Structure formats: C-alpha cells, structure tokens
Length: 180
Image 1 (cartoon, rainbow, N blue to C red):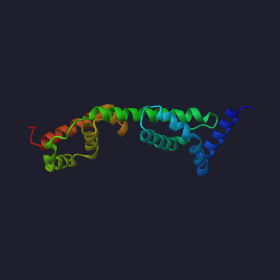
Image 2 (cartoon, helix red, strand yellow; image 1 turned 180 degrees about the vertical axis):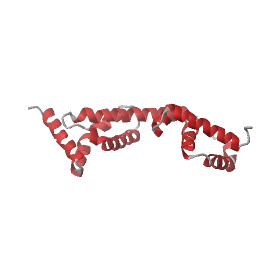
Image 3 (cartoon, rainbow, N blue to C red; image 1 turned 90 degrees about the horizontal axis):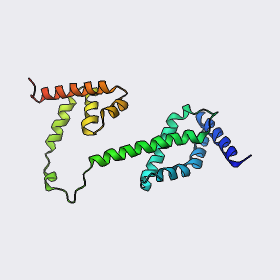
Image 4 (cartoon, rainbow, N blue to C red; image 1 turned 135 degrees about the vertical axis):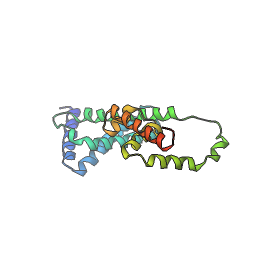
C-alpha cells in the first residue's frame, strides 16, 4: 500500500471525527493541511498577510460546511474546492477595492475641511428608510456592490434588490423635497 492511500484514509477518519465534533481531529486536520493550503494561497500573488487571511477564511468555510463532506469521498478535493472559492472571493474583493481606490501623491487640503454635518445628514436621511431598503442602498451606493452581489448577500433576487433601491430613492427624494 502506498503512503497516499494511508494518508487519505487517515484524513477521511479525521474528517469524520471532526464532523462528530472532535476538537482533536480538527486540530490535527489544521496541523496537517494548513502548510499546503498556505502555499496554495501564496501562489495567488498576494502578500503573506493576505495568504494568511485567506487561510483563516478557508478554515471558517470548512467549518461551516463540514456537514456536506461525505466520508466515501477523498478529503483533499473537497478541501481544495473550498480553498479555490476562498481564493476567488478574495481576488474579487481585492479587484473591487482596487477599482474604487484612487492613489494620489499628496492629500488635498480640501479633505481637511470636510463638513461632518454632510455625513450626519446622510445618516439621518437613510435612518428613516426601512431596514431592507437602507441595507440595499448602503451595499449598492456606499460599498459599491453590484445588484447581483447584493442579491446574493441578502438572499433575494436582483429584481427585489432593484425594487428596494428604487423605493429608497423615491423616499429620499421625497425627504429632500425633490419630488412633487
């Protein structure tokens, strides 16, 4: 018998013990698999801290979906499937952030003169909105998420997101006295 079969058998046993809430099995899985997962994340051309963040996120996802592992299947493809989606999500998040960031050589002095009342007024305006409309508006306009992303995050449809956003815009225009 080769070492891979024994290793896979051991990993399967650890995973099924982990599914039964055995903390020692989880610790052993983390000890055995974290070094190779970290190498996988470092191959994504991210800094060390970014790779470690992905590793932590991956273990959280593994923990949340551990019930979906089937003992008849190999552990590594299941783990690396989760790792792949963790890496893709981190990449998408990084790309969104890069698109929104603007690098400047020096900070303009006008930033020091920003009126705090403008943000307070915005907070007051959106505070009057129903929770679902406020949530959608913040995700779309403040966080810069797409309608599809907001739909996934709120477990609703794109149409429902657009409807909530439209209703929020109408309510805000009314509150600002911009609508008849």
